[in-house]
Amino acid sequence: MNERDRTAQALAQLLQSEEPEVTAAAGDLTGRHLVRAAVVLRHRNRGRRRTLAVGALTLAGALFVGGWLSSDLRGGAVDLSAALSGATLVAPPDSTARLELADGARVELSPDSRIQLGETSDAITARLASGTAGIVTSDETNRRWDIQAGRFNVSADPGGKLAVAWSEGSGSLLVDLYEGEAEVRGPMEGDEVDLHPGQRLRVDAASGRLSLTPLIDAELVASVKPSLPVEDREAPAAAVPSSPSPTTNVPAGGVSVSWSKLVSKGDFDAVLAAAERRGVPACLRSCSMDDLYALALAARYSGRSGLASQGWNALRSRFPGSGRGAEGAFFLARQAQGAGRHAEALRWYNAYLSEAPGGRYAADALGGKMMATARSSGKAAAKPIARAYLELYPKGVHADGARGILGGR
Amino acid sequence: MNATSSAPPAPQNLRPFPASRLADAELVQLVRAGREDAAGVIWDRYAPMVRRIVRRTLSLGPETEDLVQEVFLRFVDTLPRLRDPHALQSFLYGIASRVAISELRRRKVRRAVGLTPSGVLPDIPVAAAEHEAREVIGALHRVLDKLRPRERVVFVLHDVEGLEFADVASAMRLSESTVKRAAASARRRLAVFAGGEPALHGYLHEHGVRRIGGSA
Image 1 (cartoon, rainbow over the protein chains, first blue to last red):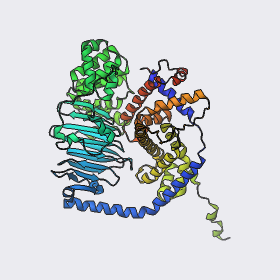
Image 2: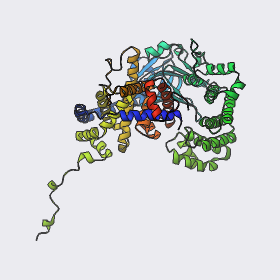
Image 3: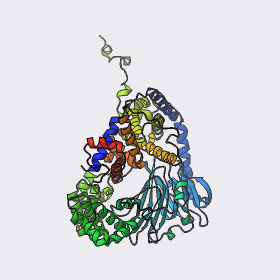
Image 4: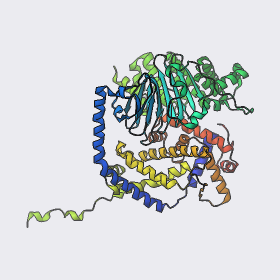
């Protein structure tokens, strides 16, 4: 156990010991009564609600068949519980369209944007075929939003505000997060970025370049506007550049910020610039483990795969046996797999899994190993790994892939 | 003797199985059927757990009971979406965590405009009356307040409540890897922030932390 874990454990114990057995008799009685009353009321109203729900679904069918949706998106807000039938919604070419779902969530589509909505018990799903969608998720129903854009998936928590722009042609994705938390996953395992309020993620799928920067206008964050970011209103996804925008610098006043912190803020350019000032070869030889890890991550997220590779290799040779060194193997595997070098990827996945069998990327590594084996040696060779994966991670992100391998010939 | 004389005892001798001893899944089905007494049993069974999470996540305050009630009202409202009635506890963990996250975000906004979380002066009752203990507890809550909402809830559910990552992920409807990253980030930030709270140093030293505020 390291010092951080020891600190967290001690603080957790302090929080546990602090727990007073406060008698909440008054609160208990009120709450108990309240929840019982809520059940009675809900049961009483159930019949009426069911009738309304059936009515809404029937209407949805009629709207879809009649092609009413695309024409009526023009202008004001419409109740789009109907839209959850799976119809593709198209905003008119000359104005934005605002949709409002029954749970209070709102969507604003820029002109010509196309989106398809659906729902599961846990999430509202959206497939953004093209254009820009500003989304205000509802925390009324506690459902997250899963927004698919090409091969990317943006998962936003309930109660969040964000804008997603996608261009199929250029393979460019932009995500601005104003409120809440979001996670963006790419097509490869390990391609996931946590977004925090006030951050902008840009990905250029063609070059693999990714940048995570603060939103330029901080007031946008403070005002928490649900509408689209100003600069993306007119030409949403096409305007997404393939190069990263300028990022923040080291704060004025000479306060030094750790590279790890800069990476967590998404300020990759600052880390790369600092490494270059120090001299990259010297850093690879003598930087601390944390700095080296941060440098490799910054390089990876900036699309500088050569430098990232050097960083991971230096981390492994200088800090063998460390958790960070093991993660270096995982990222080298990712890089090799992304470049189609499956045999090499397999070697690195095996290295990671033997060095960190319970590591935080263990599930992704096993899934990656399964896919790399299937690609390099065929599905038959990957079957034992698929079985192991399903046994360990039956609900994992590769579970469908594993089932496909086991079900295939 | 007539054969009918050996008939089973009359039904009035049978008592219904006490609702307080029903399994979670049975209670869920009864609530779905509109039985408010079952809702009362669920309240009795889980209100202490929900109260604990709300307190630990949000620090103690007068709004605690309001939020506990909000959790249960949301539970009644969203019950039709509970697919597996056996997963009642996890379902409540999830609602409690989302209510806590919403409240933490609201507090952040209030703090940003110069108000205390509730808009009134803070009144944090602590069990230990001693001044030193108060200082330690106060410092602990200041440190926790600096975590991001998701990190704080993950820390409470995993490190304090002892839930497995998979269970936290299921309750919060996040991927396990996201939860693990939030937990790691929470630990990293807790260590750093604890370094800035001298009142915690003695306690941490006693618990074997050699380098306070330090790295791995």
